[in-house]
Length: 223
Length: 268
Image (cartoon, rainbow over all chains, first blue to last red):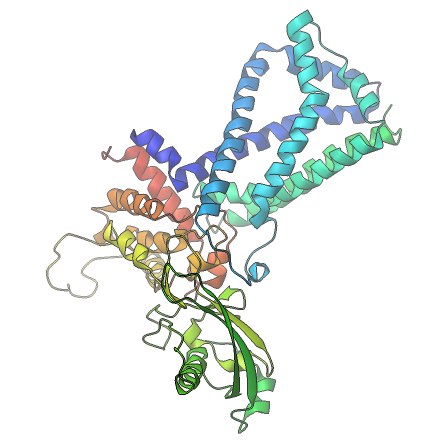
């Protein structure tokens, strides 16, 4: 094995990949949440569609999108590999285990939360991203994403699934944001407080903003 | 130091032998045998006994009954050797923070308690017998690079080598690791990263460790992975359960040491 693949397949290398792709996906969330929040202008989707059109057609963004898909695939595949390796490291479980005494449940449940997010991701992309991109591929025309949102979020079950997805995202980020810095070796008394504060704030604000979108449309606040 | 509960200590003065306990202890005759829990009753347990002394009493009782005593690791019984290793009521070294099993006293339990005792559970720590596990994996990680191989002769005069106070303090705190394996036992992934990072840190922080700094990090991590320990999820369970309270900063330092070494050393 070359030194490079040796590094990336080591226990620390796998965590390095998780941290780098995780922070990259966090940067994507910022863009995604910001542009989607344009629906709160409540202008019949004009501002939202303007930026949606930019994201869907700008050649630089479309190139970055390939990186985004790769980022998701690496984060998911690497996460599943880690989950398997970590499970194999303890073949016999404890009969009595008081893990709550030394760690938070969500830090121990990143694999579970990630799996819930993966299920949500499949549902979410099949609602918007996949139909839109396939239509662009076949006809060259974009779909009216704003109208699709208004239609899809009339179903209370769909709204509930999206809210549950956002709750999973909250817990996943609450540990993942800080954990990424530790995996990269960035643990310093001067910055730990800021990382923790920004991580907690980010984990609350972004999923809350996302959850408000289907709720606002369902309740007719955004038309 | 175990945290004493003033109230229960006052209550127990001069009332030795006033505890009755139920024990559920993991028994396994050898590494290939199927193990299982055995239930034992112990009366007249003094609250001033250490947890290991309580096990001595249990073993005396078992010997008198003509039964096989429980095998468990122990050596110094003063919290510095890292031999004792019991998973007590779901936590390594039991309910107190910052102490080994030998420094845990029965006053941390109540009369009538049921206490469940298991061995460390990890693929890399196979059970030898009962509560004794094979921790040779740690020795092999150290053999891979946890040493300074330069012959330095006799000890130098104090302060002949200038070392920053902060670096000396951090190195000392890392070197406090006694290699008991509670970090592995506590970690949901049975990861050895707190142990390995403490051993890498204590040498990376000092001038004597510089010559082999890169290759040490590379080799020790490779050996850690080869032993079948899991990866780190940064839950912090290891540090919370560590009897020497080794800091998570060491794991961050190890990540820096390893990634830096991998991308810059001349070893291929």
